[in-house]
Image (cartoon, rainbow, N blue to C red; front, side, top):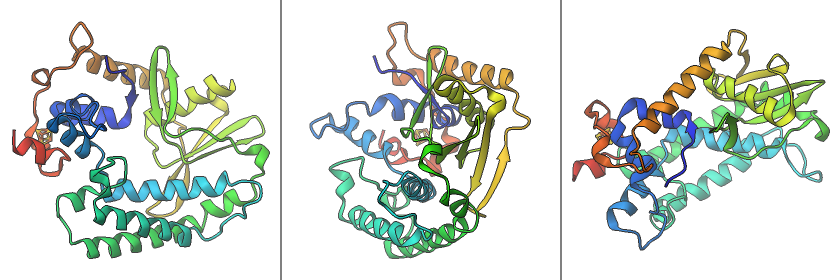
Length: 282
Ligand code: SF4
């Protein structure tokens, strides 16, 4: 039986096309193995594609995280872009060389895979967006993190598991730091479920009550860092999250297995779906 956990991505896939949800979480299971059945391998390959937007956010988050949680002997970087650019060019080169076809966890862009944009144009455009995003982060976020001492930095694994009763949920904050008795969590997401999970994490891991948690949302498009969560209704948000998770669990058979015929297709989402290549031939 494939373990069940909740994440924003999972909920979004479920709310979009149930068949896409099935493919993502069940259809490609085991497809990391080069000897897996052809269809399983193909679904697995498509599952790991990232949109250019997702990929850019991931690079930015990791650049900020690596800088913040740097080793003691590493200097703080006020300019994020040079190291990020080096990584981007290396990874983009590997995308073009097709490394992702062998190891699906090697980054590959959806837009490149589907040939929506010429490679050189995409590389230049993405690199330019990353340069501008770094410059914006260097205005507010980077200076705010520069003088945070090691004793105040709170490292964590990514994705970060957060437990609500028997349900494991996943989030991916950028960084965390303590401020007196308060835990401050900086995240690109600012929706209610993410803010709720910030509070559960603080309580489960650090015994910090919800009113001592500050969620700051970083908006890479503008560089703005803004406080969010003042109007969070914890009870209602928990109910909504658990309800969504229960609906997904109900789609499984009594023995816990998933079957494609139980997950209807929603053709409204095909035009931009990662699985359109697979569905188009089935
Ligand atoms: S291609 Fe269309 S039907 Fe197939 S998974 Fe995607 S949205 Fe659903």
